[in-house]
Amino acid sequence: MRETDLYQPVKSLFEERGFEVKSEIMDCDVVAMKEGEPPLIIELKLSFSLQLIFQGIRRQAISDHVYLAVAKGPSKGWRKSYKDVIKLCRRLGLGLIAVKFYKSKAPKIEVHLEPGSYNPRQSHKRRKSILKEFDARSGDPNLGGTSGKPLITAYRQDAMRCAAFLSARGATKAAIIAKEVGVTRAAVIMNKNHYGWFSKVERGIYQLDRPGFDALEKFTVEVKALNLPDFSE
Image 1 (cartoon, rainbow, N blue to C red):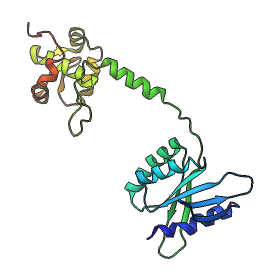
Image 2: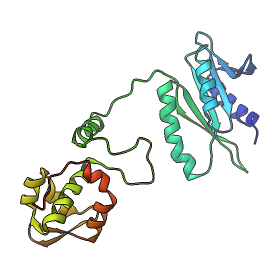
Image 3: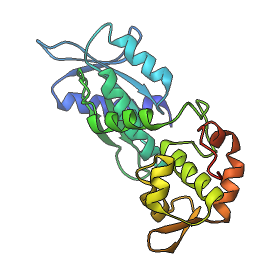
Image 4: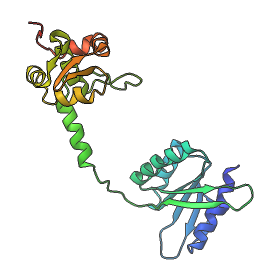
């Protein structure tokens, strides 16, 4: 496949919309004109890339109506990443066109996004969650950019507090643990047992299991940073 294969489907699309279409005008791949309207500029590429984005942004110095046209890939991974591509183009005010090619029939063209200004709607729920986690987390136990290892969240820190108490005192009522370590959701954490650290001895009473002891050893530095009292006293 060549980049030029995209041209005829794109040309036909805008001709059907009533535009006169010409290619390679100055440094623009495609320019479409209709009387009384600003020019449309379309940049063609076989795949989406940062370079294509840069081209689109440069063309916005000429017109507010700029499209990026790419060949549509067949894989699931492509479809998943394309959602992010659409979000990015929407943010930048760029139109987005995908051209799907077939072996035995004409290409199918899909206009996923028209050019235009974008005022994003912020997620107040997401913001609230971030602020809640920020305030609840003790210190700064993670290294920015970390991947492939467990993150120390406020939830994990609360579980560590419960684990440290049980390690020192043995099986205890959840209400007592909550009071001693200052974790109001202690019963919920131990009952859900997300990390597999705890087990229920009887109603309302929990103990620390082997994975919990191992976790305290694994996260020795992080537990120490919580500045917990000596529960063995």
